[in-house]
Length: 292
Image (cartoon, rainbow, N blue to C red):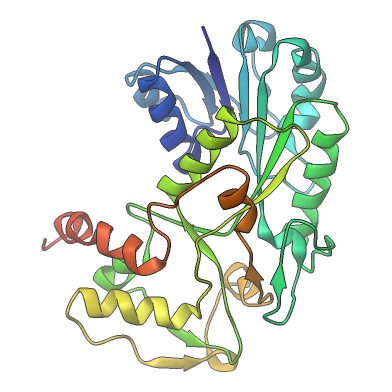
């Protein structure tokens, strides 16, 4: 039996896990809390507790039988916690592993002033978060695994989107001239990973984003339009009150090319732009709202 083990069975990994479970894969993975582990175990997943500074209690037993491995735990200040705690355990699985995926970020390309990047572009991260991701990519690349790197754009999906921000009053329409972002629906992330599993190419890296990079304020305005509401007022970036994390996202502007995932993996995105993605989420987000 094929077995997928997910380090970090969260928002993105969970979609893939449920799809592969329905295709006959055994699914195992990690999370940080006993409560979440129990919830995921109820879905038929073999769950284990793991977190930075808290390695697997019995890695040999947890990883036994793994044929496919997904790494989606973000690196910390000290480095990638999975690599630090279990790099050797995972390296020992190499002869039996058919596919390994690492979920990275387009932040490894750094700021390009709105210019386009491809998988062949130089990796020049300009934020600490991007530098940590690049270091993690390089660490996993040193283990001679059947590794595939997926550089994800901004992720959205159920419960995590601009519609929710409009409904709960937290959405801001911040304008920074020339700023452009790429994004990807969580269902399309799972579709790309499935396609890679079907067509493995160890050593490959793929940009995972939709077909239309767009200014963030346009996405907020479209969400408001779908809901029949006035969009939030425009706020100049220099005057916006943002957390350091939020402000760091505006430090980089680039158009990310997804040509490779279309041409090599044959992926046809379910949500090729934010318009299709938000429209598909509309009914569920309205129903989930407190006054829905």
